[in-house]
Image 1 (tube, rainbow, N blue to C red):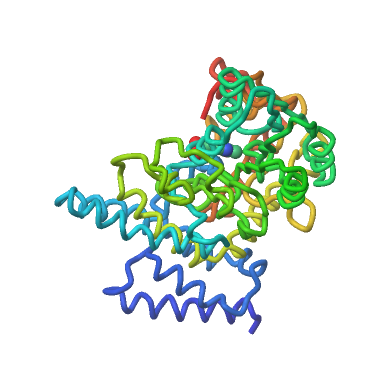
Image 2 (cartoon, rainbow, N blue to C red; image 1 turned 90 degrees about the horizontal axis):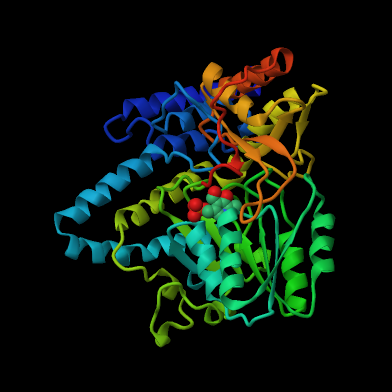
Length: 454
Ligand SMILES: Cc1ncc(COP(=O)(O)O)c(C=O)c1O
């Protein structure tokens, strides 16, 4: 018997055991994900990445519309049913007597701060829970003292909302904003040198993404943070797409502040984010909403936003548990496996170009960008939707205040629940487009970010 057959048997045996105790184990619940994980205990993440029996269990842990193929998880991802159900449960509970239960849930959520800090490698006193990356990053962008003439160095391919925030400070406070441009994919050395060369005596902040939301270009965060620190420059890192996507520890990045959207790759309910601030740096940032002086060095000062839906925040705990049940390494390996499956199949076509770095060691996981020479990506995205019911976002470079870039591409972002059949359908659709072209439709899908903001 081959090891695959053995594993399959072990898994089916386990699944049988699970089914027979159905009173305790709900279909699609976290317990089944954990049981499936245990049956894979002897396998490497790369081996698990290819095991469809394991991923079938993950796929069943979501309530989805499988008549559509969602390859735009980079925008926001569905949460697993364990989180969805818990939002309802916390809502029900709080609603029974909001003034009583709200405070209770707010206190309980301190455990989630601790768990988040433990999972992602920082001190709980460095982890603020917020509503998303926009909020997290704007706290630090607007919260740092800057004088007229002080310079921020960022890039043209940073997120439009964050660029807008710096532009507003430029208008309001007279700071200088330098946006650097880079080709994609770029090497880590190129990006490092680009920032190093741009430093001037007035540079006060480096602001860049861990991976971009466009082609998933990875940045050398640790090297740039060390460079910045050696010159007294503060580093603000946009980790909207990175945390929960591929494994790393926040403290190892050595940056000063790091903002995340947890509704993307951590699969948390929409309205969850986090902000890591290196402990010594907490007093350097004013909170977006005022806090008392006694909280100057307290990470909680960034969380005071008045009455807000605690059920959403509390359910973050379930998404974190789901993430841990799969395991960061396995998740990253699967996301990479899915990306390489379509990218390797398509890259052999001379007219197909991939703008993300597929090389080893891994530079990209669940997000990559691709285009077909001679086909408008907005029309291609419409073709994907009309003919194949594939949801995918076309990237089209815009002008300031948006991101600026000189390529067009489809950004493809599957997730842990994506099936191989869905990936193969995307490959088939692209091959069809190469061979036969795509119809010109009067309503192409608007390109991001030139025509829409999201
Ligand atoms: C790189 C990047 N930064 C920041 C954000 C803002 O995140 P949110 O809209 O969740 O606040 C996004 C959202 O797509 C993003 O991709």
